[in-house]
Image (cartoon, rainbow over all chains, first blue to last red; front, side, top):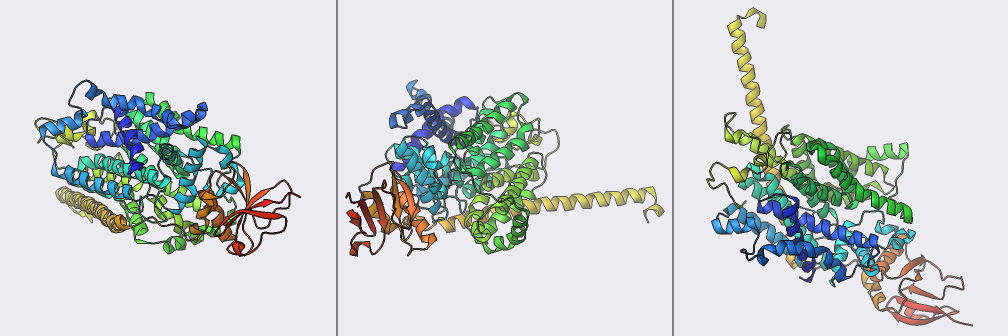
Amino acid sequence: MTGLAVPVVALISGWGWVGLVGDERNLAGRLAGATALAAVLTGGWLALLDLCGIPWRPSAMAAGWLPGVVLALLPVLRQLPGIPAALDEAWNTRRLSPWAAIAAAGVGARAVVVATVPAFGWDFRYIWGLKARVFAMAYGHDLRWLARPVHAFARPGYPPLWSDLVASGLVAGTSAGRAAAGWGALLAVGIGAACWRLARPAGRPIATLAALAGAWFPTLLAPDVFHSGSAEPLAAFLFAVALLALGRKDELPGSPHLLAAALASLAVTKNEGGVLALLVLVCFLRRVDTGRRVWVALATVGPLAVWQAAMAATGIPREAMVFHLSHMVTRAAALPSAVAAAAKPALVLEIVLVMVVLTAPAFPGVRPLKAVLFLWLTALASAYLLSPYDLVWHVQTSLERVMAIPLPGALALVLGTAASQGSRRVPPGSRQSRPQSALEGENATVGSCFPAESAPDDPVGRRFA
Amino acid sequence: MAKRCTPITNNILDSLKLSGAMLLRMSLRDLWRWSAVTAAAATLILGLAIDFPRPTRQPTEPAWAAHLRPLRQAPLMQRRPVPLVVPGGFTPGDARKLLMEAAWQRPDVYWRPATHLPEAPQIRELVLVDPRSVDRSPPQGWRRTWSKGWISVLQREVP
């Protein structure tokens, strides 16, 4: 369990900051935001240390978490009950719903299960974990190591956030496998919390199902050599948080900051994360307040641009691609059979989930999500067409886990949006007829984002979850 | 046919069409909602089925990792280029796996993959990966300074 120390400290730090960058009162929403900020703060701080030429020592790393930890512990210092307001409220009112308890227990169980087995996947051993060990030994990003052609097998051009998070555990003194397991456990909690929050407008039973399905999503964090310790769970979590942050309109200060943080970190989590972050930015940008659009766009593109500039400056090789028409046409013809050859239960399920999302009723908030998913699949197919590797091998070893990235968040969102819309049979103009989805129309208000706080059967107007 | 009906009949027909469309639309939405919930439940069940053995499952290493594990104790200088000589008896795929594993075991060394002993006189040290190297004397001009299992560290003999 030593691998859990760093993620837990980072989470406490993120919890301190999440109160400042947003006005989320719901525990699950705060937990998802705090988890995202834990990853952003850790990765961003390590990158900043590197840019300033400061070695990644435990003390330097801890300095990045310190302000957030102080912020999180301020209630204790002020002799308040010592727990954040949302938890305190739930505890005092004793209104923890059975559904929330089931979701918490199920998500917590996955986190414990993930934390107990050190990461051991092949991609972890020879890509993510290897680079984390190199960075930890060099006390920073060893760009010279990445630039050596002999290390092309380690995908040196992939943006480094996941390796940086694993390296933070190594710097603190744990092994790479345990560090990845610790962060993986935190990501399981974060995905579960974000999915709960996204699906909450459809009611607690659906939110519970979404949280459990997100946390236990097949292929993400799966205990086998193809998935253990890979970067996809981080990307899936950040995508879900980005969807969550999008729904919070600008009456709530801080939601654009959480969106910017989620997209910025998604952009530097694998190449696929970069594409997904840019697609979210393009398809959802008009839903962001005009004054914040530039900030969100710069935050998304900035880290990616810095990484690309560093690659260009040090000669780090990029992913090989073949831009030849006959090559692409041949592979396009063979792609369906390659997908069929790779069809395992998890992949078949993912294809079904994609169809479910793409055929969701066309409510306003779901349309951009469908566009993102469609364009994402197009980009994914293009990558397979341009790849120089054997198509069947490439599809068999990657499609299942890569396609999983947007699905937990997307499924939770369409469940929360369309299911709540379809289930409501109330006359227009009544209190319940307001948009309840997290991503509904331009006139969505604070209340529309947090229906639980104003549910008619809740006279106090305060609920735990 | 509609032209021959009275306006009242047309209104009734229009209403029926509208109601039918609404019913169809409603049932399609309900169908979608149930399919989405079913898909989410299937996701959870499959995730549990895949993950259930994890508490009893131990991390597994690649088969070739065991042969290179002694590399961790090999006396090698950090951040120095060291040839990793994997003789031609291995397939290119196997040689690549051995290189990757060497990088995992000793990321502090700048490995240079090779299939033959280097001739350049400035290269004074190398690592030889060969299952039979322990039973053989080192190649001429080289002396073995350390060995374990498949791994031998060779240094060029000074004339």
